[in-house]
Image (cartoon, rainbow, N blue to C red):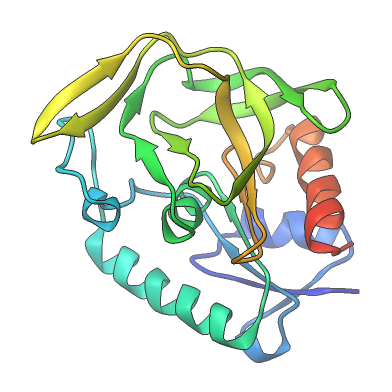
Length: 208
C-alpha cells in the first residue's frame, strides 16, 4: 500500500485515501506522495501579477508550501494538488492562473473530458480561478464552461471571453512530477471525480 503525506489535511482527505487502501503518514521521508490541498487563492506575486479584486490570499501558507515543494523536489517525491493545491503546484511548475473565471464556483458538478480516453466525466467544481498551463505542462482533462477569463496586466484587469482550448481542469508536469487536479475528489458523493483522480495518480505518477 502506498503512503501519502497530506499538507493542511482534513478528515475528508484522510478518509478518501484510507478508503482507497493508502496509508496516511506524517513525514515526507516515508511518503510515496505528498498531497497539497484546497483553500485560499495562491498569491499572484508567485507568478508575477498584481492581485485581482476578487483574489483572496494566504501568504504564510504560500511560504510554508513553497518550502514543502522545495523539499519534495530535493527528495524526488511525487506531488499532487487538489483545487488550490493544483493551482499552487501549477504555479510552482512554471504556470500561472486566471485570477477570476465564471461558471466554475458552482458547488456542483459539470462535465469534463479526459483527453487520453476521450471519456466525459462529471467532476466537482468549486473554484473561481483556473490554471494557465506552463510550457512544460501536459493538459489531461478539459471542461467547456467559462465565458470569461480575467488576469492582471500592468496592474489592471484584462478579460478574455474565449480561449483557443478548453478550461484546464487537470495538468501534469513531468519535470516536477506534479499532478494538478482542480476538482474535489474528497467531497462526499464525488465518486466519479474520485475514480478519475486515482486513475490519474496511477497513470501519471505510477501510484495505486
